[in-house]
Image (cartoon, helix red, strand yellow):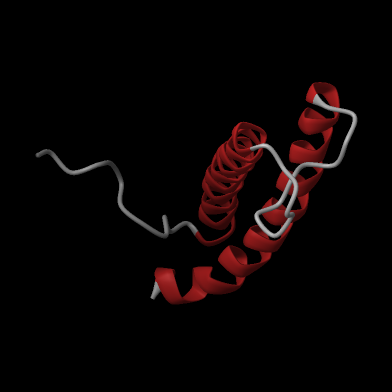
Amino acid sequence: MGKIAFLPFSLGSGLIAGAIARRAFEAVWGVMDDQEPPKPEHRDVRLLKLVAAVALEGLVFSITRGLVDHGARHAFERVTGQWPGEEQPEDK
């Protein structure tokens, strides 16, 4: 039941995380380069610069999404008293 009730929290936090991550990536890239980050559809772009931009973007988005999701789960638990997920990682 908790996982189903958590769905709106998860969707909302995902949208918030995306917006935060986009701004964070643009800010970090702005420190590294004065041009906009290259995209795969750009024809004239150095491969190394594209790899750096894509890797940085993935890193920023992944970290942001993880932190926001974890915070949303704590907020959900404070409101409902239920943790929407596993208590801890499983042993191998």
